[in-house]
Amino acid sequence: MSLWRIVARREFVERGRDRGFAISTAITLVILVGVILVTALLNRGTSFDLAVVGEGSRELGREVVVAAAALDVEVRLHRLPDAAAAERAVRDDEVDAAVVDADGIVVRAEPDARLVGLIQAASLQERSRAAMRGAGLTEEEVDEALTQPPLPVDALEPLDARRRENAAVAFVGVLALYGQLFAYGYWVAAGVVEEKASRVIEVLLATIRPSELLRGKIFGIGFLGLAQLVLIGVVGLGTAVAVGSLEFPAGAMTTIGLVLFWFVLGFFFYAGLFAVAGAIVTRQEDLQTTMTPLTILIVGSFFIGISATGDPSSTLATVASLLPFSSPLVMPTRMVLGEASPAEVVASVAISVASTAALIPLATKIYARAVLQSGRVRIRQVLRQT
Image (cartoon, rainbow, N blue to C red; front, side, top):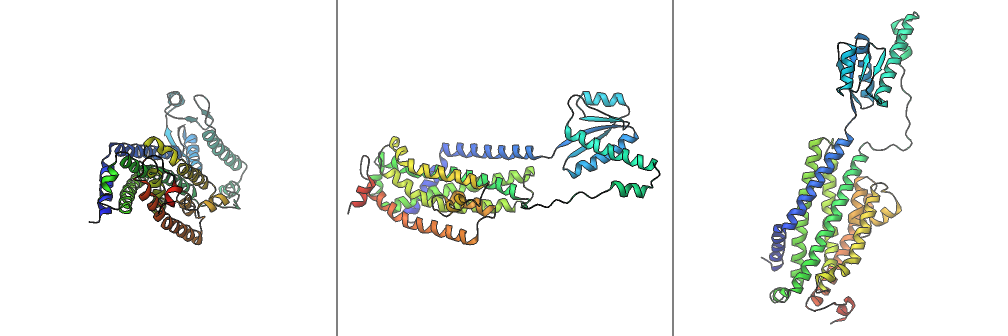
């Protein structure tokens, strides 16, 4: 086996066994499942319980059920024998309201405007129907007068019915990408500093070239991050399907694939930079200083990615989706929402791959020259070395 593969396997296994990794993964999954469950509960259709007393109220209740269904509101009818039973049911919160003999509505305190509005509209139609019949109109004439088609709605900018769902999935994808890029990039930098501070790096470089050591470290940590993303995606998608948040999971599957793809592109771009950030210092305390520019880039790209879920066609989102340091957090959102043209996607991928291909040899050179030097190392001085 190649030496860099041995390093990659070691990084994957040891980091995967780390207690902090297990705890962070569990916390992430708990939060993700909790968010999906809360969202499903908040998006669940409104429902009411309506008690009806008397034959006239029963007919009125059936009209209320039909009218409520058209507004995505569920009304459950409860037939009760008399007004006293209806009042007890309302007082004990067994029903939200009661209609007694089609003459009045009984509620406990402040009535719900939607339920009362539905009852009033149905009652008005029934009373109008009775008045027309009393005036001598036939049943057909009554139906013709009362059954009128609703006004047509002409949307100037119609929205895709799945756009809100896609935007929610894209938001979760951006959030996951941000966490993964930052966390695993930090692991690369912290691992380099740890080996340098403990002088283990001197032993390692006696048997392996710096380029192979760095390659193995990046691939091992990157594969672990990819595996964690797959786990998060599978658990999140399974939970969403189980609670009914997703009517058709194909869109979510596409988003998960995009997140994984852009994580690979983004991680390999940032991994070299994080390795340099770790190689030019000797102490963990100094690592935060050298990581500050990378942190600013990732955090700024994250906020642009979040804003892109609301306005994916903005100039800022379009430009950021083409830049290699921000495209992993912006382009997936624009693709999921259908705002990225094929030419923009190809250009973004090409720019990311070309930038990474140009950056990795430079980062490897800096890493190889700085990792054995003690104290704070200046990148400009390292590059001047022959």
